[in-house]
Length: 462
Ligand code: ADP
Ligand code: ADP
Ligand code: MG
Image: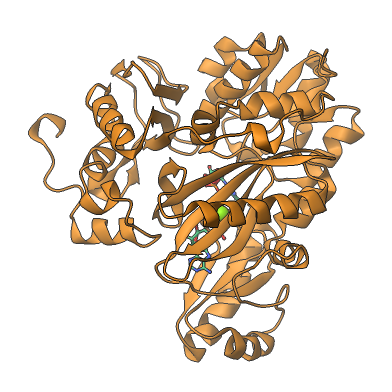
């Protein structure tokens, strides 16, 4: 079927821009890379059929500048926009503007983004669809008085969360009444400054939970899931190492979880790729919805590896007018996939960002190894954006083989010129509880605090 997309503007950078360009190429869709001045020599600019400078390095003047992106699309005669993740990917206003300019938005419609992007409202929507949510407030809380009243029913410890938050930011813990009284106004002020909305809500803090999320795909009529990802290994509420499927779920729990996700997206008439995030209490077997991301996620490749389905191609096919022909019964789990995020950060110095020039670079190869990256030898990592350099993804028939392949892949990786999280991942792969699949959202921070991972640096790497 010929796609309604005749030329695609990639409104993002880094590895995800490269990923999107490759998917478009495989479908025969010409691409335009929208680049800031700092990214004029980027891999995305080289791989795309054309590239267009949208503004200075600063994200607010380039990748977050909707007018500049629309102008770039107009000038290059692109008729579709893929936003990737981060930046404007969850901006309903940008999605609206793209459509108003007569172009195709590769993602769900603006109304859905608005509805699910507001985390307090998303909870209500999930609840209405019969999906269990973490006990918490009904919608946004405006006054401290309301918050204190609500907290009695929710019970402490609890989290104050920004409705518009993301990227692990905008979340504060309160262990008691006093702490809530102190933190609530601060949370409101901080949310307003960081996300442009001071709306906050409360959620019971679930200790020792696992972060398990379901990948979905829909075409507006029909929706399927691609099973779940385990993303409990986090630092500062940001994912570091992911796995598919989750080693914590029984098959019966898996089906219940994934069915609940499909029920919710069916109710939304969801169109595109999306992720429903849950906390899973392994002790009780209960799961609770926390939020939905109405975009492609960083860790999507592990779902692709275990299902054999190309999510980014499907996003483009659906946006181009093709119906989602995948049936749930056709989607099977095959083996185990792991993803390790390689960031330009120094694990020995509290993960301080340390962009630099890539001096030597050599990626692992071989069966079951996949690299998603935009860096090359001589590449200068710009200091303006997030620090993700690459994702090393491995697939194995089971966990044991996947972990063995991950160790080999990391041993075969050479990346010099700056400190990276490669050292962290090498040590995580040796950690007994991680190899056993026995961890929760607090495990990585605990290991780091105890220095069980990242012991004294190896001489060669100093
Ligand atoms: P994923 O589950 O795909 O890893 P994240 O929530 O970590 O998703 O977000 C992916 C990227 O988007 C990261 O670079 C993150 O910093 C950025 N991001 C997500 N939401 C926001 C937000 N509300 N404000 C700023 N950056 C965000
Ligand atoms: P973001 O929008 O920034 O991704 P989330 O609501 O998805 O924020 O939460 C990020 C992380 O914070 C989760 O993956 C989990 O580790 C932790 N978290 C969120 N809500 C809770 C909760 N109610 N109890 C315990 N941990 C939580
Ligand atoms: Mg989240």
